[in-house]
Image (cartoon, rainbow, N blue to C red; front, side):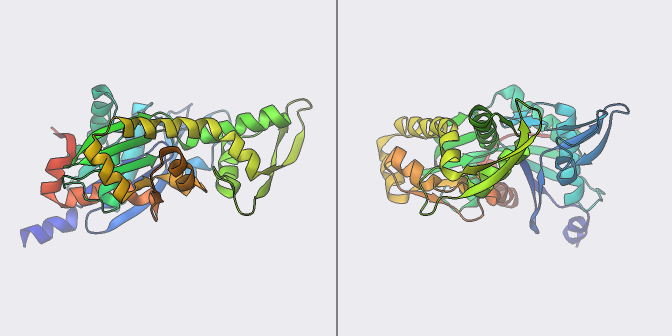
Length: 345
């Protein structure tokens, strides 16, 4: 009876705190929200006026007194206070606006960040309203989320391509055997498109336009039928509005540099992997998760670069937060995969 009453007031949570998007998983309910990792602040009053979707719509459209901030950069906290506001927004919504008893929260983090960066995530989570905070490494969480046998003595390889960072890791017996964290991801792809359009067309476009281009026609492998889209921006020479037609072939050229960096991290991870585990990976294939898994042809591109079969999972955005949620619901698994934790004082 006491447990049932307790469950009415608190639901432990898992949060995938990403550079581009943050997701929340509530124990017993599953994934409950996906929000852009953006906070809008009024610089005169220093008050937060919007978080998530509403704040993202303000990027590039705000008056001088309002600033839309991305509090995470390349997978780690760049603005502690704004990250705290983002976490509090996620926790409150996960608790449906009521925190009679504060929840335990497990947060996914890149595999190879510093202890200072890990401590910052724990502190921000506690200050945002958690009664206890734990960390789980994103590749391990993603592997759990897609159902790989992470606790068995066999090798499983995951490549998680997020907005600000790509984590490649080989996992066995609940831990990372070899891996790389490359500070390159979807945001770098957007920036590469911005630079390509500026260099080739003298056209200035914003990051939201570049992201739309990437989603609508972006690819890293030749398509059976190449795509195109109209792109509008401001002419660098005249300063006037201008429109061009951009093809998927051109976007593929623009994405060559960030994709080369991602592929290099995957190859380095395989080079550091014990031969016995490499054999397991060849039998099982490399699994790609994160928003980058939605990029057309990325499975074929990485298969060519590694010589190993590659699979992009269904619903790749949900893999990390789902795995963290499952770890939170299974105490034995949580004890094996959590890398750090602290209770509120």
